[in-house]
Amino acid sequence: MRVADTVTVTPALSIAGALRVPGDKSISHRYALLAAIADGRSTIANYAPGADCASTLSCVEAVGAIVSRTPAARENEPPLVTIDGRGLRGLRPSSAPLDCGNSGSTMRMLGGVLAAHPFISTLVGDASLSRRPMRRIIGPLSQMGAAITAGPGDRPPVTIHGADLAGIHFKPETPSAQVKSAVLLAGLQARGETSVLEPAATRDHTERALVAFGAEVSIDPSTSPKTGGRLIQIKGGQRLNGAALRVPGDLSSAAFWAVAASAIAGADVSITNVGLNPSRSALLAVLRRFGADVEETLEDQWNGEPVGRLRIRHGAMRDLVIAPEEVPEVIDELPVLATLGTFGGSITVSGAGELRVKESDRIAELVAGLRAMGADADERIDGFQVRCGKRLTGGVVHARHDHRLAMAFAIAALGATGPTTINGADAVSVSYPAFFDDLDRLAQRNRAPTGTRA
Image (cartoon, rainbow, N blue to C red; front, side, top):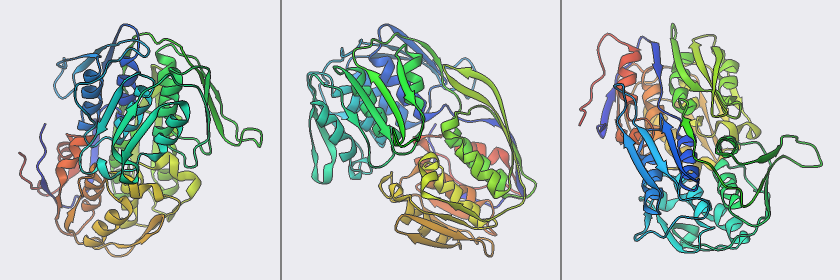
């Protein structure tokens, strides 16, 4: 599905309906990487359809995993992905640089996999990814024994000279699920034991995925003085078994509809088969604090991941403050959460400096875009504030090739008095190619939004 570069979104009277969101991007990356180093065949249903997860498939295919895609049995569902793995440390060198596209998740976690393989790999990305620093994986993977070089500022391209790794005890300065995952994936293939002591808990999809493939992972969730945080340990040399897997709907994609339903009077949205992993549920707690009516129904477990239904309805709108200790659990949802301040109440975020090194400088570009639409918003060094005032007027904004900004601006546009034109709207293809189609279907309008679809 190809999305137009420029899309114009018109205001909505409300938003209502039921839908499924794409497969979880974070989980899809991890399943593909683990399947590539597992013994035997893995099947992954509901694999995320966006360009980022396609980059991961292309990369594991380039280093020897056999990847096939079977068309979906039903319309509007992604294909079934089948991966024949090469076994632990059984990948082979690629004949060309490994293109990670726009996906920092691919580059960081694939780096952890390849650090244990005795050959040279070069990881490259698009212009946006090439500006993102990789020092947070270079440090621990180098401590484990890999030799890694990168461009100026530790930015891509990243060249990894794989080695016989030794386990380490690693305590990241900044909580990051991607960095933690890179270290655990390297530790799985290393001598001895590897542990990661998180200063604050991050999403635990890697730990759950490792167990789904047959590995043993030890987790101490305490925050006592003894550990100082959440401790994850893995013994090296454990072989993985191919598995039949199913990816839940992406809660970060569902966040856009959940925020819209929370903010717009009369809204009522249900999302089915969505992942309800507790390490991602901070979003729902934030929406409840805002005043939304959030119903969460756990219905199943898919390979250790909780799955169920969400129903979100508009409620009273209150001021929100998101403190630094909350940020790691809602880091991907912060751009769309910012739009709550354009509907009612206000939102203040601090301790989110990590947003400046995402696909774009999400603090600067988010505030600039919301201001262009008429918002009362301020940029701060490590966050932002959006204050409730008059309704947005709409306007022209640029997503800066950042999928989460494109979708956040579209949600804000629903509450404006006039239309909003989003340039760079095709960035949604990174994670949610059908986003604007779902927006058209859920939004209740006097007339449909405009925009040329290529």
